[in-house]
Length: 265
Image (cartoon, rainbow, N blue to C red):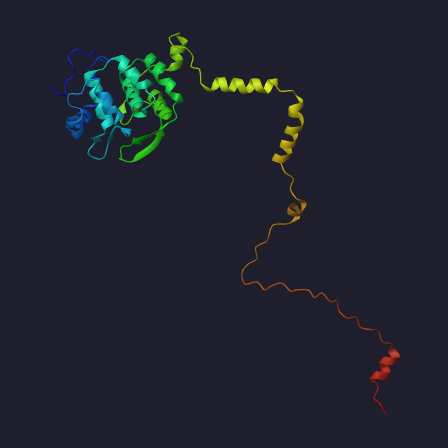
């Protein structure tokens, strides 16, 4: 009885909302300690307190396929099926980043393509860091905008297959969705307008000096030197030339040479 979906729940993608999570994963969640102790008799109002206590996000990890509290709360939300206004408040919550991530993942599983783009794309401006527990049980560092990007572009996340949604450009061509406007467009327009307002003489001399600084001249001493040549081991050291010039011998006349060689009487 505790694992059944509420009676007045609306089918999602033509099936029971809990069936979006794979059967093996659902069985592991039902057998986990967090599900039995923390998720029992939870309502849409009480689930907010559990979401505020989250310290990381993730799916299943380890060889025994243990579910994380994040995945347990996702399955509980699929079971009780809270109203859409509550999920939107989760996404718009700026104080608790993991509450925002919880609402974004639930909307990605149950919402339409138009709702996913309208409510999840504004989260691209959230650059806060979050911890993600991978399948090996190791924590990885990520950001909220990267998390939202993976939800909108990838086919699976944390080991769970995401429902298919239409591509954005298809919805734009059918006029069901307006073109996305980035938050950086205003800054780029302001920067370009400031450059146009400045006079031309402001750019003449400083830019030339800046280019000269970027490409410094090479000293002629460094360019003339040839690279050192490696000598083989065991070669004798080069001979040093003496600085003093060799002495020149004076030329002797032939008569003096005969007198010197002739024996004395």
